[in-house]
Length: 123
Image (cartoon, rainbow, N blue to C red):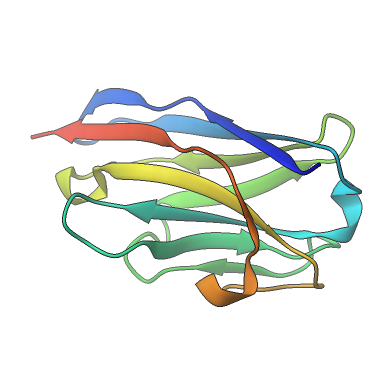
């Protein structure tokens, strides 16, 4: 059974940083693309970043380019999202998800999801 557990969320002031973690179990971690998504209150879930199976391709939404970095530690089955220069508009619940494909960034391509971790950025 695929299990994804996000952690690392919290309250931070604008300009600050957080590192989110997604701990994966129950599947062959190396065979899946991993993505981070977020959902703000009253808004649709949107893609933030993703990384390919071989870690050679990454995707970033325009709104986070240059501020967020996705990385994967295959020895620990963890995917990280380093978030720097946070803005109030980054406030949302953040979710990680898996896609059984080399690389994906569309929400429809991801089929297993974690429960999310909340990020609040104060101004």
